[in-house]
Amino acid sequence: LLIMLWWSVACMLHGFATTFAWLLVMRFLLGMGEGGAFPAATRVVAEWLAPQERATAMGFINAGTAVGALLAPPLIGLVLIYNGWRAVFFSSGAIGLVWVLWWAILYRGNTSRATEALVEARQLAERLTFREIASLRSVQGLVFAKFMSDSAWYFMLFWLPKYLYDARNFDIKQVSYYAWIPYAASGIGSFIGGWCSSRLLRSGRSLNLARKLVLGINAAMMPAVMLVPHVPVSYALALFSIAFFAQQSWSGLIMTIPADVFPLSAVGTVSGLVGFGGSIGGAIFGLIAGALLGHGFSYSVLFATIGTFHLIGFLVLVYVGGKIQPLRTEDLREIESHA
Image (cartoon, rainbow, N blue to C red):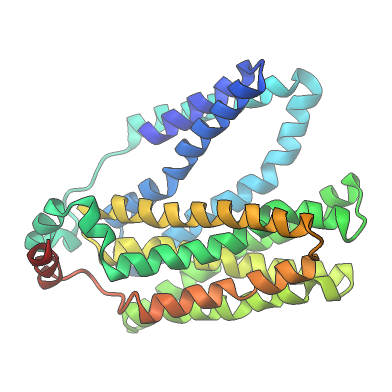
């Protein structure tokens, strides 16, 4: 509730901007609000849902970003036409405040989850410091995997229109007409990835296999993006769609794992660390991509590079992150003994 209230107010404050400095500060505050959404969502999923249902739920939640990406442009266009750009921020923030009111009235926490029967592990986890949580190899593996995958995702997300302009000679109308296709694929991928992992769990497969098998398939699909600069534009859009599908399937599962592994008292912290790793990766590689293009490197080099990122992240997750299983009391005691 608080993070959405923060985001909604920051969004509305954009509409009062009269200087670039004001706009810059509001963008920073908006990003802070946005960054808190998925850790909070993961915490709610962990609180209410059994492991067999979590990946599907996170897939639905993650698919919401794709639905928003599809619906927002035409709605924003209508607001712009009739009321100007400031009204875009006022109306978006107002919708967020309505959501805050709805959540405050209807949402109730669930303190009776069967997974919280591990009372001792939960109590020990509550005593862990931020530094101790960050020192866990399982956390470091997740953070690095998200760092690598979001480096590729942010590049595709923000550079796709520019690539279509620069390398494929699209105009604004063509970009508007075709660019929605990969985003639609990302929404489908979010749901399908979560559903497949949940189905594996329900069929008796281990938590470790149910998560890693789907993640591995997603990572193996991502090198398709390497071929984008070398094929006709229709095939390029198909390859983008495959990559967007796999990335968002991957993303939903990565954000589910903190709920699988950690007691409720630590889920939000771990999810926040994972989200931080992804955002920093996206920011850093965005700067690198701009610098490389500015120094004469082609899009082929960049696509060849990002096509490897998910595979690298997956290998680190497997060999550094260890087995995906609920955190045991002995694990927590070992951390405390080394502190």
